[in-house]
Image (cartoon, rainbow, N blue to C red; front, side, top):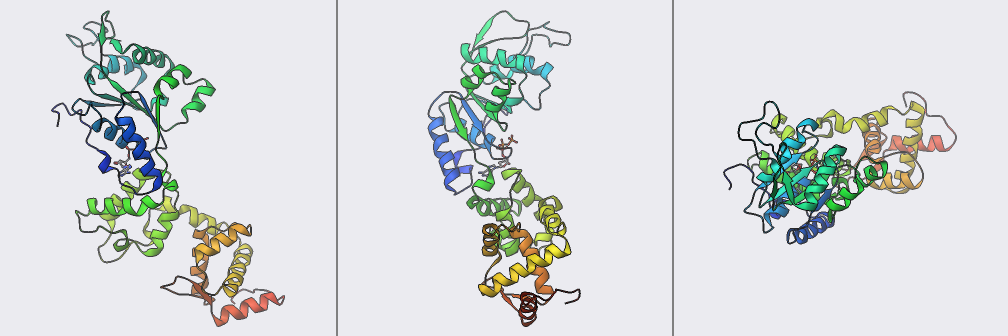
Length: 362
Ligand SMILES: Nc1ncnc2c1ncn2[C@@H]1O[C@H](COP(=O)(O)OP(=O)(O)OP(=O)(O)O)[C@@H](O)[C@H]1O
């Protein structure tokens, strides 16, 4: 471990996941690690781009050198030049005596990680391009060029090519950076990783007491988490586990209603947006399908709804089925998870199919 704190801690073994998509990304990243060209990692926020950057560094010939992260979204633009390229004594008021090396110099012999590169201001992009081409920097206020041996790994969660077309990102810099592109897919495109990641982070945040998501979440909640979009990707999942571990009482498992409200607002509002008439129409459709397919589950119902152009997702169907169970219209079988009509349900459906009207209080 380096004393200066400029260390990459993660390795490829730390990247949790068993989906084809993440395995493909890891394979590609391993090949990238054996080369020394510039890398552009792209993918949504929280997908693990920095994790990949560190793993690449640690598997490269530069692993004993520094790993220096720079976040363009966090650095004020007036400090960019002096932070990255350093400055000489007297370069500006307030400049330190003896000057100061910049982050590029700190990264000499190692890797510099340029995170959120899409946020780099235009004039800075020109300087960066020159540094990448010439592999040397000149400190602010300095005259002498300093030769450097630094590998650049850049990352972006923006569509950089779109920025090029819009004119806010330089095309020449884009090509310079994306010699080796690496795509990290969003969590919703690799759902097989959700359970493994939940188990991994549960273990971490419970000091090893819970290692299996099934011991922590109700089955319905896990189903919901598997169909959830995860806009904040793995970071959102890590934060969720940390939060739930800290608020959960040990005796019960996590129900859907225990999830933070922003995660379930979709199902809540989607179901309450429907009028009573629409809800009843949907419920009658659901009952018909249950009658035709005894023991059908909500996932199959959701698929049928899609095919038949009903705007009913699995979440809404789940809530409606719970409601119908409370109203005594259907029975939800626990193990197989399917549903059957009760006598009351059958009678109601028959009445509606014969032209009767579903009245209040039925
Ligand atoms: N496959 C994974 N296995 C284990 N942990 C992961 C994985 N992917 C991401 N994480 C964790 O999720 C969090 C976010 O990851 P990271 O910071 O690398 O994302 P990012 O894509 O760089 O995000 P941003 O674009 O917002 O900078 C970190 O705590 C990281 O350790």
